[in-house]
Amino acid sequence: MARILVLSLLAIAAGAQAQPPGRGGPPNWRFVGAEAGRPGAVVKNAPFSADVTTETSVVLQDGNHIRQTTKLRLYRDSEGRTRREQSLNSLGGLAANTNLPPVVFISDPVAGVNYALSPSSKTASRSMGGGRGQPGSRGGRMRGGVGGAGQQNVKTESLGSKTLEGLTVEGTRTTSTIPAGQVGNEQPIQTVVETWYSPDLQITVYSKRSDPRSGETVMRYTNISRTEPAHSLFEVPSDYKITDSQGRGPRTEAAK
Image (tube, rainbow, N blue to C red; front, side, top):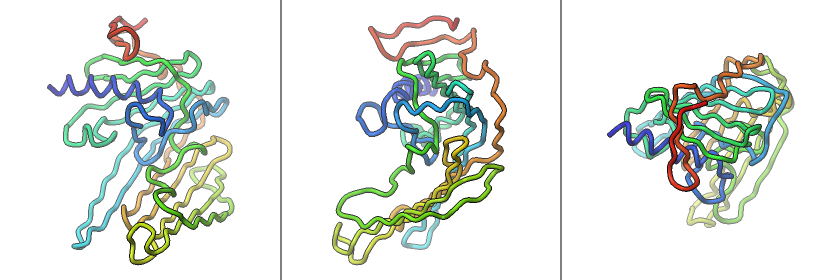
């Protein structure tokens, strides 16, 4: 049963990789707190690898705390290919209550293809349409970020520059205020989003979102290496079985 669920989620996730955010279709899989970049925002000549951690903390009305931490490993080569290693449990509600094995997502804009790999079963789901960005890219935003129903007052300010994880980063703070009465609220609701962006890697390496309705979410990149990742990381191993998630029904073949 668990294997069937893994295969189903892999097929959905592979298709979701090819969908632009916010344009319908399969759900946009969460990069533990950060959206993928703009469709087609392929970054070349800026290879790196890093750990990405997202921590969410919510305080309930009775004083109880809910804390969640999700992690992934991310790679990008000089051609803009990306590889993401994480657990399906961190992708959202579909797998939240199931103990599932790690999975790997590969986006290859050179070949125009995406893969969702299950190392435990040596299977992969393939979909066409590579070329997505990566977590924390300038075009991305924190899920549930500044935005929402009703008229809002938005103020953006520069936080200057500093060094973070060995990178020179530029800080921005955006404060969004929903006026009292706009959504039935007795008092103004204020959301603050702070981001630190690396122009060299074209990613946001740190972001913090504070919202009284949903708590605080912090996303950070650590253990950043700017060396070129091995090319094999962006290929499906030869002993995997590949299933197409689009086209005229499922078609399975051995990886070439």
